[in-house]
Image (tube, rainbow, N blue to C red):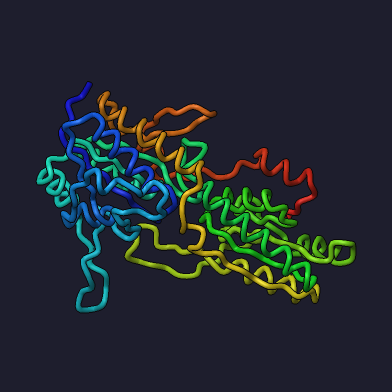
Length: 365
């Protein structure tokens, strides 16, 4: 067993339900072990660079299991190797390598091991810290469920519940007006969230990045439904969906972020194209950050606590620079850097896809 006196906890990237459950799991495991100080790093890597920390005790960990978000704060615009410091006289962004500042924070707080709760971008930023000799342990979280090496991530089941609920609610208004209702969901370049929400809600059309669509196929499908007993159609559309030979719709670029592309707007485009081609009234709803908010589901609480305690077990065993994963129903580990610069996309032979096709769901292909 490795002698650990102080641990650090950091939440990086976008927020999601279940982060506080993971923080609580690590912290309570450390308190149960006894003699271990817990340092919370505020606002992700920005706090690590700027040495903004706070000591966590029993009172900080109490009552947070069911809270959404993260009590530590997070940041998806800050990378240790490319820290934005402002603009020069010509208006260009100025960046600096802040690895030394990160390590200074670690040293000043006597952190023996850093627990990083994040996604592929966060784990990518971890590489230089590991190279500097900092023992790290990763816990995968993202509503996108796209982290390489694990079958599921913290936040996914809650976001799926929210997406399903939204699509369910669109059924009644779509039916009342005999309209096409397009609901745009998050997920970046992966279709897991849209596929799961669409299948669970019985959506008529599911559009995901992994299966480029042809708008004529969608129009033929909703026109046929318009003429039969159904009358209306519900379309679950991933923000990364795109037409064959088309490109993904970018809502904005944030140059100060390690991942500058922000997707969004494809739902409105699909609705417009359908209405123009078929004459069927079409409306768009973009869920946006609603999918990230609120209390975590029971599954996310269980997953976060299980991941967290397994991660703490790795620390005690000296099994550093690993990420905890759930693979084929079993908790395991893989190297953190295995998840860096990679995304787990929906395979075309996915059971979800075959199930959806079996009940006559259209994918636009």
